[in-house]
Image (cartoon, rainbow, N blue to C red; front, side, top):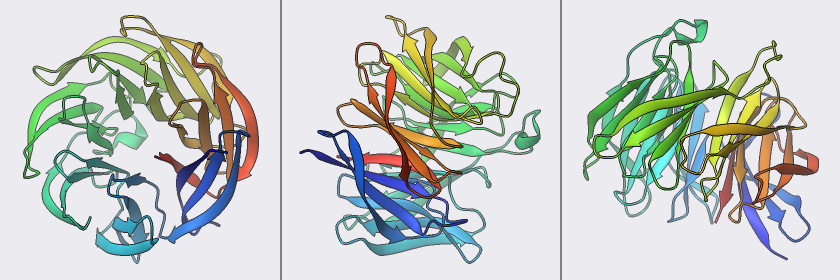
Length: 341
């Protein structure tokens, strides 16, 4: 029996109490053993460092920030809080021992140095600006902050229809390298890169579109190659694209649809420059904000925020297609799914 641990970040608006864990039994292909890891206020994003410190969004008493949790002891070791909304995204830079945070409501990027004990100290911040034509785009909304394949920082701003690329110093200082503008109203949310670092896949939450970009590592700039839809042409109800994943071999891209309540599977052309949607499969619940592939990529776990359930799929490595194996596994208000190696 092989068990793989999964961390689930949640909202705590209704029934959830914080961060949960469960195990995937890869022999039986079933989820089991749900536990509450730590009580936090709406820990909507989590990321685990190689030192096994869990960095989690926290919200309480009108403040938002980041909790540092020892994964083994389940103890909160530090809380870095500020007035206003909590972040939307967190990412660890292991090489430079930095933590990046993106705040959707404030439109900011924060950088923190990680000490040897895992605690964090802010080193820099960037205020993004801009707006777009849709009602949700009245101001900057930073939704993603993570590393490019060449160790720059890439920031996705949903409100301003733009992707920013920064050079990052060893001391955790940001220097803007490039700005890529999407089509108006695209509403970009997440970006992922091909394994060779030559291409990026940009997901538009507000438009339900997926764009393929050519990435120039010499300059840190993007070039738009093509854009496809994540939903059927006949779908007229609300949809918001959410999470985005690329298989390790670079042959498949996966995106979740909140509203259509599905995972879209895209096959990538041999050169990485084009994608074709080959499957839309139900998440068997409402509002799938996040999903993740396990270490071997034999399984995919998707969390449905509004129906408090998680669905499990087997993945065919040759075709990229998903097959439902378990549904209605109870995890409350799931918005983040992270496999722990």
